Amino acid sequence: MDEQQAAFAAGQRVRVRPVDPVGHTRVPRYIRGHTGRVVEAQGRWPLADDRAAGFAEPRVETVYTVAFPARELWGGDGTHEVTVDLWETYLERAAEDRA
Image (cartoon, rainbow, N blue to C red; front, side):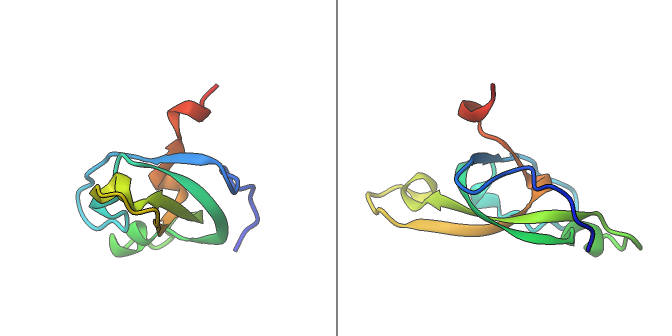
């Protein structure tokens, strides 16, 4: 896989793009539009959406493990987090991190 700088760093806050694409996507609906914290970059991998669409050469992007407070996803008063692995295409800088 080619080497390229990751767009997001561990600890950075990111927002999952609130999109509802046609066809296959690996971004769960329950986190779309939510803000989380990058735990780590997992390396670069072919974008699953492109593979499912049958592209001969899918985009290769950094995959991030992103943590979300469970209470912000489902309510309640728990203190645990939910982690999800997400391709860079699905993410944008959180509003409070934009300068």
